[in-house]
Image (cartoon, rainbow, N blue to C red):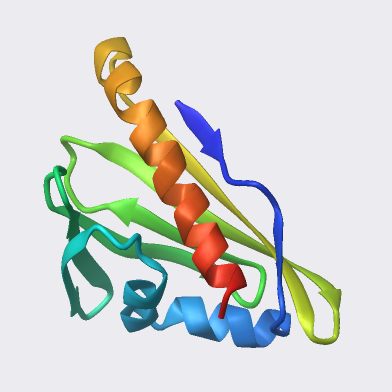
Amino acid sequence: MNLESPKTVVNKSQKELFEFLNNLNNFEKIMPDTIQKFEVDGESFIFSLKGMPEIRLVLKEKQEFDKIILGAASSKLDFTLTANLVPVSENETEIQLLFAGDFNPMMAMMVKKPLQNFINTLTEKTKEL
């Protein structure tokens, strides 16, 4: 299952936005308002939203200033969340989040809408930085 957030322009340079997202503590600032838990542990963080189980995301890969890839720490839920950063100008960067998950059809049907809302919220809150 693949989902995409809308492409959104953020009033930060590509380097600034990359460094913001590279600091996992900053993800708490862009989480949905329904967040109930957020803890950073080295190269990963764990969070839970109201009505959802806890999820641990691990920093899997980063391509300096262009891309940051987070992945699920659990093999039960196999997915990645990729932030693509494209410079628009010296002080503006386009961000798009891409979710790629390997779920059975029943699970995909259940989580598609909440996940789409989640990545859209992350993108919108990033725009407000």
